[in-house]
Image: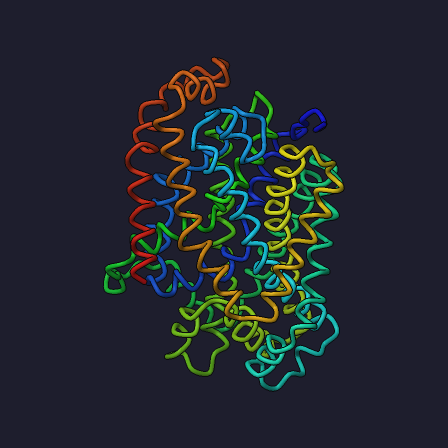
Length: 444
């Protein structure tokens, strides 16, 4: 029998946990590369607009489904639309979260590996960082060891429970993550020549506008907020009745934007200041992905005084960002097993840990398997999940239930004014936006 559902203990815990789920490696490696490709400041402006009009309404929808049902992602849809095919939307979210863990844990393991290389000083002595990273990727046992370490670290907080594990870790890790970002950003902008990077990042240039700018920014907005994979529905089920869903969504989105922009402030000024080939640095940033984090940036850090310290701080930051996301991903699947199959939290965590290790082993041995998980979730499952969540809230849920959730059963009467514009967005605007991203992803 499942235990009585607990809720987060404080407003700070709610925002920290949800922001921790949203903030991840995508903010630190995907956002800078997207910004570089989209012309810097122009991309940031469009990205913020996309979060306001598309990301926040979808986040409110996920919080709403979770809190209204007080159940795991799959159970929530089944409870709110019992006996209908809508239950498969929730199950898709659980499966998506599980599959993302299969490759995300491997990348997270790389962050731990590089952190310990940084503090030992061995990374600063590497001559060819491209070959070094290739050697790590060609060594499955090394990847598996670090991947397992990261999975067990995530599982520790999951098995500790909602308040003592998830909420407490978020209240510690999120402030620490921001502190590290600020320290690294200050160091970056004090480098000689950093102004060129700041100009690129914050000075709009219409000449850099691409035809795909809007779709790229919209895709990044959905990707960076961790929508469509069940995390926000799961965490929403832990919200108490006094939680203002609209305000919380705005706060979480704001923190997510701040992390992305701070990551840009860390990366762009240092990249422009330290590169010996300024004409090619934008191309390197556009390439993004693991190469940016594990090759380009270490090369830049190695040119700085106290390179060991700055490199260690950066990879500690990456590990924290990854950990806050893996905790939420693991919780989605753990809570599903715990509630749907009446398995204890400890046993559910053990099963999820075992499954994640199996997928991680396959991903460590096979780049093809790694890429299949990545592409299947990012280009197919996340957009499909987000699309149907919008349709569910916009068209299936009773209008009165939506109003009660927005206003906290009448305790926030001013939120009633949001009902019509909110429903318009989730019924028409956001689904069309997600469908556009989906088609664009297929074409790419």
